Length: 149
Image (tube, rainbow, N blue to C red; front, side, top):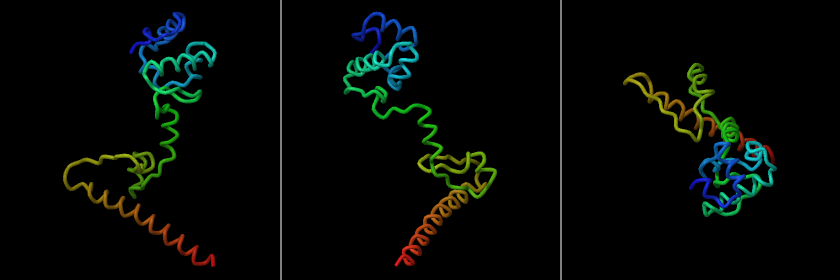
């Protein structure tokens, strides 16, 4: 659906279109404060515009801090979330450096190449390293519990 068809005032539709917001998809991941800054309008007006857009999509009412699509995240949120991910070392400092500190948990990392270069060995090494860390933590926590009595 296009912004031009939303039940907004002509001035609001014009501001949205001139700022580059021509479809509901373009409004899908923006917060009211960001929209207010882009359109140079008060945040309350931006919130009302997003509410009308969300109702035009047939979605529930937005709140003042969320985007129009449920589960939408800003690039900043995604970057900060990625920084918190646990990384598994490959036991090769150069490869870990290329991968940004190791292989991220909760992500797919594809290792390719010709036969015989060690893809399987790398996979086994990462698996056993990650499992040994879990076992060490488990043994350490049991040892602490044994001494807590």
